[in-house]
Image (cartoon, rainbow, N blue to C red):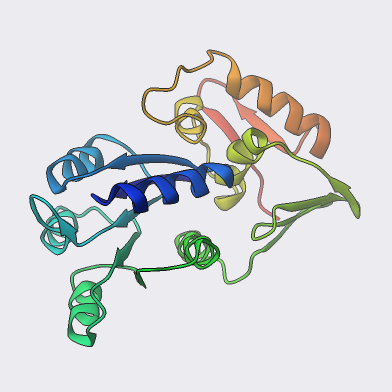
Length: 219
């Protein structure tokens, strides 16, 4: 997933960023409401991690503005505000989930997976596409029952494709899942990872739609 973290606390921001990258996610981190609004407008993220106590304004106001503009990106509020009325206000403002600080990284990852399942209309973390079985929670992949090991970059390319079987994703969309801000983009990285995935999962598993991008057929 490509995530946007809007958090002004440097310790929390650094810890979340390191943990998400260790899991193979791409994460962009900003520290203010203004920068968060700019990032949401200018980039495509799979989910937003939003702190409420920002130095230049309330995160809830940013969330309300985002929803008023018709932006439906999943938003997970992460905050120390634990009063019931504050949690209700966050959910009513358009948050998809609410996580209180301090939190365990494993719980954050589980909630992100749940958001992704809902976005893709799935109830389960197990995907079966032909002979390929994918456990998204553990990232375990088997082909005809035999385990297959994927690198973090290969998973980053595969994940958005299997999240929306039948949808065509462009090379630029897949690059967004590989690189964060400030990272140099390897011009043929997507093609290289697609080649490796086809070798491991079957040559027909990922289809090329000429001039458009790549797709995985439905189960």
